[in-house]
Length: 309
Ligand SMILES: [Zn+2]
Image (cartoon, rainbow, N blue to C red; front, side):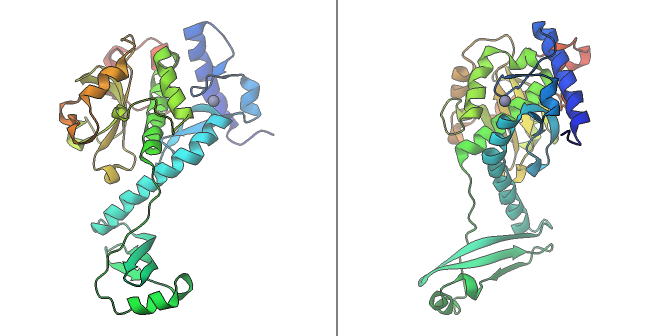
């Protein structure tokens, strides 16, 4: 059965196919940029190739390229959930700072008698309310908490730092693939990035590959694919997902074309984890943000875009 979105997928398939042929000479094949499996046009019609939202749809992403169904849903389940949690954290931060964002979440209130389950809400004026329902609480704990006048409220979030890192790495890699194409993705140094994306819990790519840069250190407030010039030559992807949770833009560092094999070994000392990140010294040039599979590096590059290396 053909899906309604097949025309867009067929268009993306054709563009990816043409890019792959330019790089390898092999016609009629689309390579999933995540697992490297080869697909044909039949796989578009049978829904084995799917539209991939970059960044995830839950944080405002748009279809940018095709990935195979297993790769797409693997990313969807684990990674999108984390990114959505980060976005929720950002909305709480905004609500608490009276930025006109309503917010509501389950919350915990520790008391001497035990934990009270409550619901924390902010309306659009930033007015906070905290309600505890009988049906969700031990009546004795609720009764003893009724006289408490000052409370500490915590909102539980489920975010794994490693999985969050991999979600940004995945979005950055797919944006760079959509922008650059197979000239970029088929570079052997991206194998480690793909293995990291496929196994989010594994420790393959150092977390220094993602950094938070102050908004005034990047050329614009919009996401972009570009290059880092200082302190290291890199393909840099700037994402604006959940920016308020991080209070900055997220930069994903990927190997630049035609450079050494030891990119991540050289990157880590420049961006040590924790406070030592010398983020103010990062200098980047923005090329643009792909609206679909542009695969510009597989085709002649217009002068004003600059060379990818
Ligand atoms: Zn795949």
